[in-house]
Image 1 (cartoon, one colour):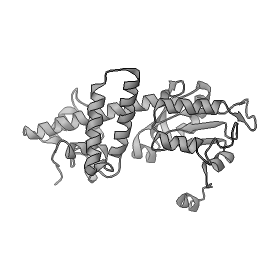
Image 2 (cartoon, rainbow, N blue to C red):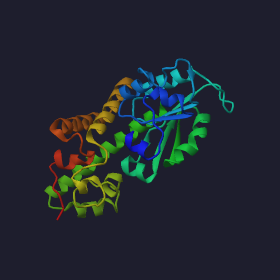
Image 3 (cartoon, helix red, strand yellow):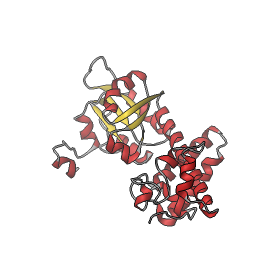
Image 4 (tube, rainbow, N blue to C red):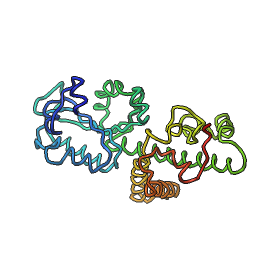
Amino acid sequence: MKMYSEMGVSTKQTPFEVAEASDVVITMLPSSSHVLDVYNGSNGLLQGGSLLTPRLLIDSSTIDPQTSRKLSMSVSNCTLKEKKDNWENPVMLDAPVSGGVVGAEAGSLTFMVGGSEDAYLAAKSLLLSMGKNTIFCGGPGNGSAAKICNNLVMAVSMLGVSEALALGQSLGITASTLTKIFNSSSARCWSSDSYNPVPGVMQGVPSSRNYSGGFASKLMAKDLNLAAASAEEVGLKCPLTFVAQNIYTEICKDGHETEDFSCVFHHYYSGESELN
C-alpha cells in the first residue's frame, strides 16, 4: 500500500472502505479462506449488508468453484445503493488468470470468466486492459473450474517433461538435444518450449535463475488439492491428479515450497543442470 500510495494511487485501510469508494472491485488472493475473509470477514466487502456501492465484483483468485458460486449468490442477493445504467443488483464474476507473473507484467494474461454473460460483456474491456484474452466459460464458478483444470494440465505436463528429460539424461542424451526433439515433434508443449525446467536450456525462465520467481510449488500444490477435491466430489477417476498432488506435496515438505514448480525436475527427478 505504501508503494502504491507513493505512486499516487488512492489507498484505503479495509476492503469495506474500498467497496464504499468503488464502482468495480477486483480481488486476487491466494486461497478460498482469504477470499471469504475479504468478502465476509470483519470490515469485508459485504460488511454493509444487503446494500452495496460497487455494481461489479470480480474475483481473479484460483479457488474452488463452490466458493465462487456461494459468493456470487451472496452478491446477487444484494441491492445497489444507487442504480447505474440499468443495473439494479450488483453482480460477481469469477475470473482467474493464466500467464503468471510474466504475463501480468506484460499485460498478456488470459482471463477465464464465469458468471452472467451480460456482466462478462460489461467487464470485458476492463479485463483486456490487463490481459490479451478473455474466455467466457459459462455460469458462476465455471471460471474457477476452468482454472483448476488448466493448472492440472500444467502440473501433469511439467511432470511428464521433467521425467522424460531426466530419463534422457540417464540414458546419455542431453536435455538440450531432447528439448529440440520434443519441440519439433509430437511431444511439444508449453513446459518444453516456453518454460523448460532444465537449468541452462532456456533463458528468462525460473530454471535459469535457480527456480526463483515464477509460480511457487506451494501454489501448485494448493491448486492440485482443489483439483483432487473436485474430482472426489463428482466421483471422477483422476489418477494423474493424485500422483501430481503427492509429488508437489512432497516437494513442499522437503523445503522447496517457494521455488517455481518446474523445480520438480531437479528436486524430485534429480535431473542435472546444463549451465556452463
